[in-house]
Image (cartoon, rainbow, N blue to C red; front, side, top):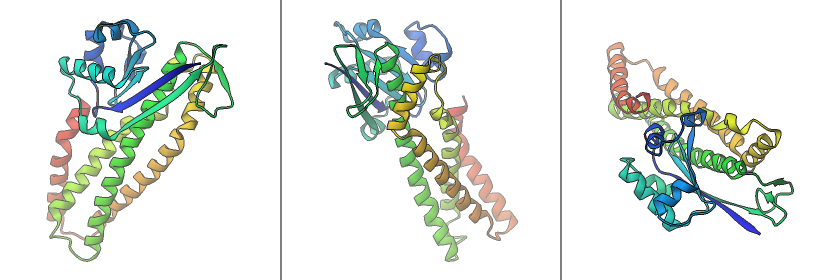
Length: 270
């Protein structure tokens, strides 16, 4: 019985896939849109010893999935990325991670998780599919946490506004609304978290594997819940602007929001 272990970490808001792929001289293809793969041969060069059945997958939204790597090997790889001027956010890394294990039997069949009733014949793409879903799940965890924090802040100032504290908290309101705008803009990129990468749609089996693992991690259910929470956030910010503020004060607030939101957005646009 062979264990296939996947470990995913959220290490940055975004990863510069083009720069990393260029360094490793990877072929430019459709995979660059979401992730790139560092294969066994390249992993061996980094670790400087034989690394059979190991690989690393890097995703544009800042997650990295390690295949059959222990903690020391993961640390070495992250240190190596640092030499490529890839900034690792260790605060994110310590908060958002997931591990998943599959088993490959002697007859070359794989159980996607321990209690899974359906088995699939092993093929090299199977760990890659599971790695992608695990990265999506980890990114969803990050979005869920951030959205919860933004909702808490927005809800708090709405309570204050309902008590009549409109003018006293204008700057705080502007900062909170700006954070909401930044969050919603960045989250637009994550809409594709639900998409099945084209390379996983070429066969019926690969599509089924992707869908089964996505169902196991409740990716679709979690995203539906996030969409509902986003609607709540929109209603909260809309409630604020329904207050009868002076026109000059409203223009000033909108200008503050624009300034606060625009600078971080440039990071995602360029």
